[in-house]
Image (cartoon, rainbow, N blue to C red):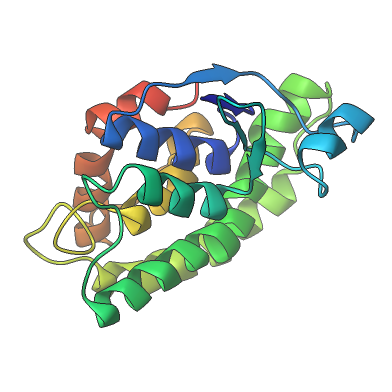
Length: 206
């Protein structure tokens, strides 16, 4: 299988982390979704990444769809809980990561990485300051009680929720930021242990 996309994308990293955790061999090919070329739109009608190319040449778009597809073709180790309530919690944590955390961490990535490195533009430091002062602390405040005080994973086993949060908050070291262990001790410990996993090390951005 081939994963089309850039490791600068947390959605690409989420998929690559799952592949690594499941031990599924794959090849990653760089693809930046700008501009929206006809070739890109033929693979994904929304012009986004990642896109999973299967052995028969068909394409599976969208990170959440790809994750569910991988669970179907490679059930072990499971990335989704069997218990219905835990399954619902895992799905919501993934959704929270892919929406709210993406908005916050993605804003930092755009200002501190994408603008200066890809477009030669200065970062909007007022925007960065607002994210660090208000938006990121709000995310950390919500996540702190979600973290089990004695586990390295949000749910009893590593799964889709961890992969998604790992991918999005994994932007923080890239842009020179982190989580204050004095203010959010559970979250800081959780992220340190999560980022030490081989699957994250293998898929971490530059």
